[in-house]
Length: 220
Ligand SMILES: Nc1ncnc2c1ncn2[C@@H]1O[C@H](COP(=O)(O)OP(=O)(O)OP(=O)(O)O)[C@@H](O)[C@H]1O
Image (cartoon, rainbow, N blue to C red; front, side, top):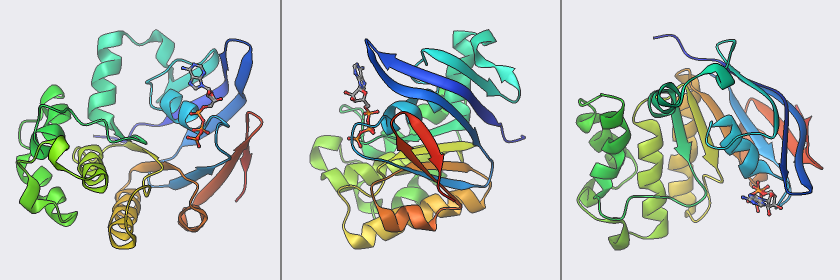
């Protein structure tokens, strides 16, 4: 299956009278890691969720493989999100009634992929969570929940992986595991977009942007 290409053109986003994003152009390129830095409240999470088709822009267009998503039906959009996008939110957003392993298998099941159990277990093992497959979120620490959330984001080998502050709440060892998993996904062809305050993480990505005053500045 070919990787999808997602393109943002002149994206504006306002909340009431507050203009948060003021004309963002961006292409998530396959096999590329990109970081977006910026001060708190500048709109990084908002931009990531628009890119992830989770929130609508006020104006501007988003193209998937050259086709405007405005022309794509809701069911097809849900299918694209489940099958092609991986999300690592700022908070883990796990389903409280499901175990760690079950949380990871929700999206594959939705996308009709029922053969992901082995891969999900292998990912949890990689993140040193192999002994906690059957733990519910309330039995896990924040850092452990974040590792489950990362495994969930990676399990489908997404075309686009959107990671919001992926190293928050993690000790240096786990942070290193998480970071290398993101870069490995990039090497395997995923377009990885990372929002971060972590300067050293941003410096390691192929491409770096800085969001300020609603404008996305290309740093390198
Ligand atoms: N649903 C909403 N309704 C109103 N205002 C919102 C909403 N979502 C975000 N905002 C505002 O948009 C601005 C950008 O928020 P956003 O979370 O995107 O910033 P951020 O750069 O990710 O910040 P941080 O680094 O602190 O996570 C903030 O001023 C916030 O209050």
